[in-house]
Length: 586
Ligand code: ARG
Image 1 (cartoon, helix red, strand yellow):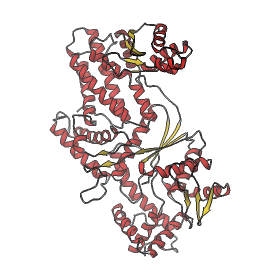
Image 2 (cartoon, rainbow, N blue to C red):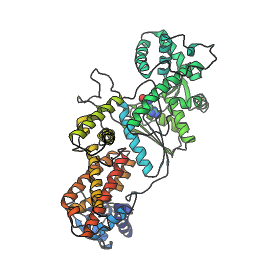
Image 3 (cartoon, helix red, strand yellow):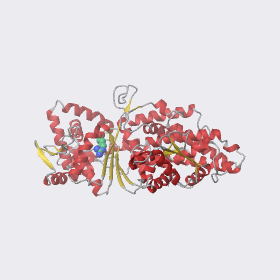
Image 4 (cartoon, rainbow, N blue to C red):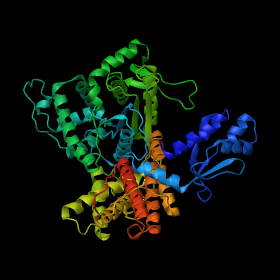
């Protein structure tokens, strides 16, 4: 159990002994570290509940606590409890953390969790808008797995809407003789795609723009979409090429970011489930017809803003983004047994998810005990404060940002004269890891719902609150440990700390469990990013105050090495939970 949990339990028992709610005993890190290490503020509400004087209540609590392990247990102000541990107790806690592979972080679950993130679209290269869901979603899957949950991550490709019909018509215009358009074709279709991803990226905006003024083309695209969804062979074969050329490029971007998806399912994965779903929703009366379309009314009496009905199918029967989302949710719950489904998607889609979740509850697709959550996020902005654009006003492709980050990282590594004794390959590997760390930490240090300004110069710096700084800080501890090892020195049993910087570092380590749990509960990896930065700073102060390699007392030296080794493990773990890997050497 974590230090804070142990203390909270102990104080909780003291409150319970007074006939009060043990939750009042919650112990937190003191906001006045100059006065105490921890505090418990429960006596004030407890006194109020019991109609007693708060200081008296606090005194009663202190009296009933076994003082062993406390250097100070005193009452401050109207009834706050200030708590400071003895140095021996701190050493004991460090020994526990050091001896635990999980650094005292409890396991949760295992709960079946599906995390839907990425959400890339077929026929479009991944772009800046996909970076946040990819980075945040990946961090969340790592945290959830570390806590013991069963996670399935699914990229949920956009591959089934009207865009597909537009592309089919666009290709037909260019080359109507292709076998995909020949109904009499009974043989195999060519294995080579008639278009590249680059072709599709040019084609789609063109066709899409023209459909606005060309009703015939619009109608043809609509019909092609319907026929594709209905299973027309040639269209399915052509569509498969669209998917394949897109995925080849997107898989590379994801690999460059060191992100992993369990499933590369698309909206189309549930294609065969759509009609039965719509039919059953109509039969049960959950869905109804409105102006020829099929809708689900999801408004609730106490809605402050109007929530429009969810459009399940257009009058021609074509399936929509909402339809595939509902059917996908059904599959996740029924087939994967999901108890929590998280959607890491741009905040601008909040109405969509509100409609889908309400419809899913109403239709019984998601029973009340299944958690559905839109884990929303803000945008990545340019220096002008609006969403990042390329120089010509376009949407920056993700691989471009990754390449820029790699170049910037390589330059930084050179400038900082890092890894001069490494081989060419090792240095390139370091630069790649630094680039990913720069992008990921630059994102994750922000709360997910706030927007941030993309500043590669700052993100790749080895100074300040950055991923590269934390990688470097971790590698530095590794090299201290290596040097010690080479000198025949090994980490040993922790002894009572003698320096304030040492105490502060132990206390930082002791609160990591709460940080990780909070990051998961709030779906907010920024808590881990922040805490990793604080930990690195606490280590620097410790290392300045305590000259490990020069220390003459072998027991103290071994204890300090243990503290360094535990900090190194903690930083590595926290960075890993953010998706950042630490090179062996730098
Ligand atoms: N492809 C969608 C888009 O580009 C995002 C998908 C998000 N996930 C979901 N289940 N709707 O907007």
